[in-house]
Image (cartoon, rainbow, N blue to C red):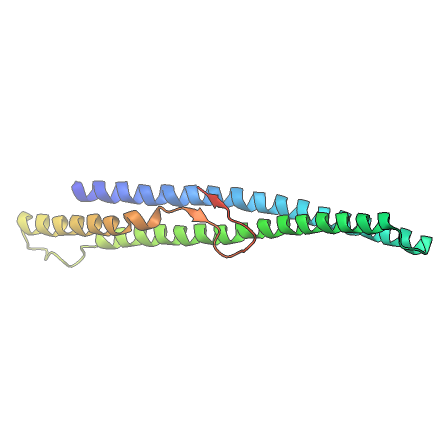
Length: 170
């Protein structure tokens, strides 16, 4: 009974973690797509404004101080939108971390079920004592495997690779 209880509890925990990670990944991807779309549309809008200002300068035939200030303001706005787009790309890094965590959970679940495999460990003519010993040993293996994974699989997802800023979620 202990063995089946451990298998059920640990299997449920791993599957619940994978479900949570999938939900978080869906939220991250949705947010990343929205941010990237908004950033690229803003970049396009600022580039159009720069082109209009340039056309105005060329039509006037002279370089006025007001035009230089306008170009500088547009350049700053463009830089800000590009930074926002790069930040959106950071979500890919965090999504990769979630996928890695899900792989750990699934591997842990596979190991737990592998520890339950007692096929051939007890000859058919063995008594209750031998069967209980094998089942107890399998239970110990399941508990040990879960303890090994306990601190590894639940960790913070954070931005690691992009240099434009830090994002720390979950």
